Image 1 (cartoon, helix red, strand yellow):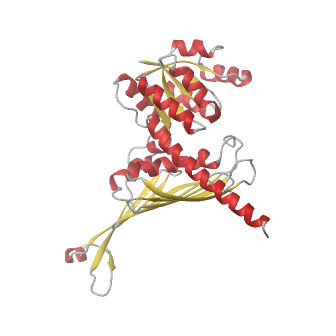
Image 2 (tube, helix red, strand yellow):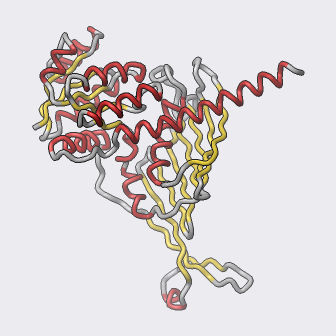
Length: 336
């Protein structure tokens, strides 16, 4: 069994605690949180030991699950790593690229596991869609959330859009050729809504929108590829696949076949609609199981530190383009 401790038991940290308790390959040693009121309540409710010293918790564990605010990720992760312990680190991996690069370099040099919590890779919708993803050419994603002060210490790009950036990089294996983006601050001091257009060298294009000031939640991705249209609803955990095949006369024997006439002697296509279903899973519990398994069997993490770093690189490129666009608008307004 792997001895694991948790740093940070806020809203998400509590969920991690419960998930860790459900995994039979994990021995949940305890947690550390410097908020006395929260820690006291969590210790009583979850029957998990509270450690008054962070170092004492680290020393008692094989690995640490860090569920603290992003601004503390680098400091905490490096403290754990330099003490020779593995790390599970919530997304985004860190606040800055230099911090992420240090974590990647140190963990590789010292053969320590670092898994990043890009949990949507374990979402039922993505798992069901993966077998159908072949050469995506256009991707459109909307990730909208109601306002919550939690997470507003960073841009909406790091808070929400980075989920879709990670999914995007996992399904399009091609370098990025161009990024354009816009974003505005509405409530917080960081951009609360953002849109990015990402173009890849293989011709694929993605349009990503993220907002944390929506009236209702939405987490959808639409993927268009040759002869197929795939939708993923990460919120409802549902996938729909519409794909085309060449029409054959035998199709007329089916009841109510969907036939698409391309016109002008271009032939016909048969439309097939599938709604794949897999056994429902707890995405957070599954990612934590994978993390423990990577340590026990000494194999690569499902979402390694490099993956988190690569997603962060794209996120910063998007934020840089947003800042350039904002400066351009301000300059234009000042010249009127």
